Amino acid sequence: MEGFGANMTTVQTSLTTGALLLLSLLACGGCKGRGSDKPIGTVVEIKAPLGLPPVPVPADNPPTAETIALGRKLFYDPRLSKDNSVACASCHNPLLGFSDAMVVSRGVGGMSGVRNAPTVVNSAYSPLQFWDGRAASLEEQAAGPIADPVEMNQTHKVSLAKLDADPVYKEMFTKAFGPGPITLGRVEKSLASFERTILSGNSAFDRYEYGGDKSALTAAQVRGLALFMNARKGNCAACHTIDARYALFTDGEFHNIGEGVGDDGNFKDIGRYHLTKVESDQGAFKTPTLRNIANTAPYMHDGRLKTLKQVVDFYAGGGNSNPYLDKEIRMIQLSGQERADLVEFLKSLTGEMPPNVGPPAK
Image (cartoon, rainbow, N blue to C red; front, side, top):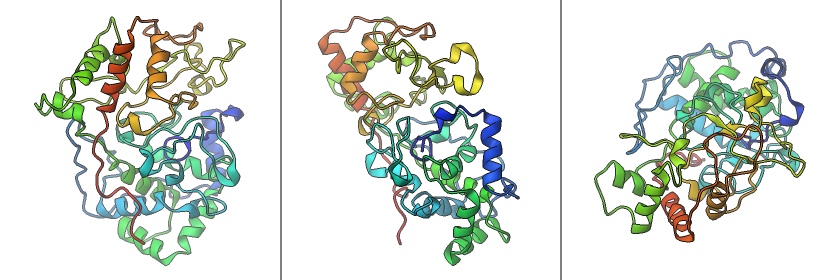
């Protein structure tokens, strides 16, 4: 449900974006009213912590206390899956950095996906969602995993009927959006508003870089930061960006970094190319944020690297050669100490979490 669930996209079907949209509409019976409702409550401010920019919010879905509370309840509710066993939080567990610590996640009936579950943390800043960028907003990606046969495997029509049969949900939807049916659009907007509150900043790095506390990082972490920024050495910031005021640690772009190449030289997963059919997008995946990276092992889109040391070693080795390898990926000479310093720096990116993003009280 990648992005909001376990990242178990049905990549193997190679559906086009248009076909995916058609299937979604058919699954929810046309989804009348989808996306047409605007929250009616008092708009609340989602405050970004130290190190993060203001949270981008779409004009038709301003966050309110009611939609955020509703989205939080939906996020942790397994009734959105066919057998009532899988919730969004099953694969985006707050105790595991809003990931799931699995190589690839499992859905209803133990079915395995093909990609590692990315963290939901700071996903509010991502211009495109999922590893391959197939959703243009948090709202658009929210309902996909529910109907995906490898993930929650429940049609939107059935999910809406379950919610409509629950008087607590009916009251919450009315308070959030006013009178009217429970629609897929209202579900999407509520989930997205909650996910925009899952922010993490004020890490040791942030206090050092933006808060003026030069004692916040250890000596090894300071050396690691210098390597991270050095274009001739680590060159990490070429994709995991840092600027003078904020640091998202991702450029939001798609890169072929030389991962996922099989012994035959072909990609096991062609990534962004599934959608764009642009040749240079072969094997390209979205740059993940590095915030809280120490809490979200294993790593890479297929979860094949278990430790941060393995990740650093992979990049130092220049990835696996292929015709579409990003120009920034090259073999770099790093000593054992330098590699250890980079790992220590990555640990300094573990930040604070807001208090109201765990499971709601029963």
